[in-house]
Figure: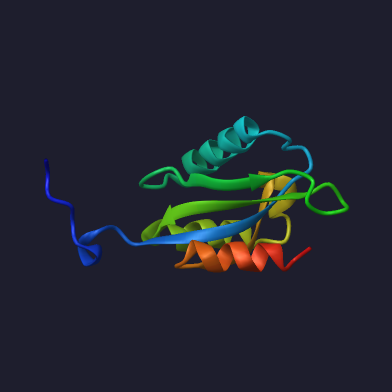
Length: 111
């Protein structure tokens, strides 16, 4: 069995809490939207979808949590923080952190 890398040697990551457009109604649609975004930005690796909930808000928008590499997080956040990001990409940035627990707390407090 291979020895596991120490925490310091593992790749650094960020967790992005995103607002999801009402047009995205399933996990598979969300994953394809993330893949399109990844190809558009030419990222080193595609972001992983960790959490997804539909129709969390009264306007029909949902939320999701993406795991991205630290190096890619700056590029993704810049795109998702734009004013028209929800219309263009179907996603808009709400919060970010190095700990998924904090992102989950922040998204649950938005209700």
